[in-house]
Image: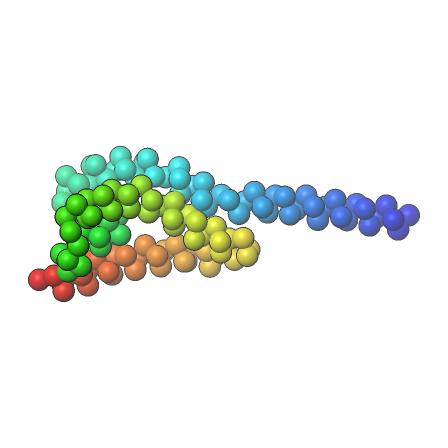
Length: 129
């Protein structure tokens, strides 16, 4: 009887681990799925001006900053790539924390990444004047 209960407990652990492994990829998948919606909303926010656009894509505005003195052709390509990669990169960083079963910490890290981009936009705008 003890052998069968040990086998049953191994199956339960195996099932929980497979569910946990699947949920660890969820933030990355959400980051990929959000990207087309964010691009669509960016086209609408661009009509409101650069400040509204920077709220959604702060890292694009960081790359476009005059304070960095980057060449124009590099800025154009890099900012376009950043528009497509910003949310999947957030998802990747959150996924790495999520795998450690630190769900609240993962959410906070995502927010810190985004708001540090906003702070960088403000600081670089101040330095570029």
